[in-house]
Image (cartoon, rainbow, N blue to C red):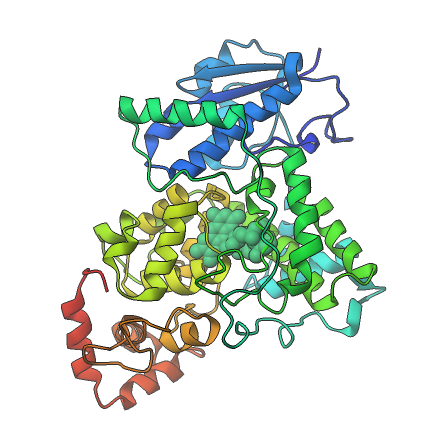
Length: 496
Ligand SMILES: Cc1cc2nc3c(=O)[nH]c(=O)nc-3n(C[C@H](O)[C@H](O)[C@H](O)COP(=O)(O)OP(=O)(O)OC[C@H]3O[C@@H](n4cnc5c(N)ncnc54)[C@H](O)[C@@H]3O)c2cc1C
């Protein structure tokens, strides 16, 4: 009998079957290993631990007698005890790749992404700057997705002018139907009981393990995909960058968890989205915006993880950022924070281990960038607290994009912004103790003032930078610069 070892992020049918014809042909026996040691290594969000254990156990239940399910301390001994006729799809981290090779398991090429590593390397070869937009266009051409011959559908690669709108004026939500939440079952109840027991034994978790919000089975994942396409895809493009306090999911797909667990093949997700545009259900701007996220961004950060190498996270600190995460940030203590953007973002993480892209990048990432939080600590924080986080997705998103710690290998300039951006794209500033247009004084917005303090710290190196020279000139024109810098230095690591 053929036997396949599946990691917890390889749970869909496309991780079974031979390399030539991926898919579950019903012939393989499956090994699933639940490693407790993984949860001792860092303080994970409890909702994340719940999702992973629930996904593994649901998969085992589906496979029934075709699955050997091992609950062990670590992978190594558990797999060694299974004999030597196992194959595995190349896993998604450097550590796991080293382990499967060390164990002598037959390793098949990786799956779960749309573009291949060899195509990426061919594209990257000899390029000075690996621009995401160039990668994305090349991927569209190569796959033919949303292409009319050699031209992009609609005659444009980019619908940013239609997308990225601020939230509708005065709205408290986008008014879309509530996403179709999964229904918890006995397996979830058993996971909760085990996690309670583990906590009593001393394994620490962060955050709340509220009702499970994300898909952990193939059936739930397909329902989540259908629900997104039916109810949220049409509004996805226009509002993909907007945020509202009372509408945490907005028009987002909530598919990163099932895609990263390997339950959905990103190609099938994109095909469904493109199909919805073809039948007139969704506008091209939304379908293109979504294809860009999945094939343009998800695949791109996956390839960069391997391209930048195993030391990228540990050795990148181009902005010399060494501040330790303050306790309120580290412990998701939203209630200690007055700045509404940060308290809303932290409360979302505490409740669900999730926020949408702009909150990750322009609220939490922007804050960590401005305050010079140590990139390794920030990466560790995102990895532990986000339900969809895996090492491959952290490197480029946190180190490259949010913190600019790689000195521009990934992004040509830091994604830094003051409170005006947050005011435009969210409703967080309404009712906040601070004012986004105030730089100094009791109501000085810590994000606005923090932005200028950040520019000031790097002014010498950016005075001739093609994209940062302008903010440096802006800083030099501020009449209250000295007062602002003293104020922000006194703020230190106190909760804003
Ligand atoms: C600092 C930071 C940390 C992030 N951490 C993660 C993470 O741990 N796991 C994760 O999957 N994504 C991460 N992202 C990317 C993005 O924020 C999430 O994929 C998205 O918010 C998940 O929600 P969604 O499924 O509703 O996404 P949607 O907004 O509906 O987007 C659709 C899909 O596009 C993909 N996608 C879009 N942007 C990215 C990106 N930059 N990198 C990878 N995939 C992308 C995701 O698979 C997502 O499900 C991070 C981004 C930043 C800036």
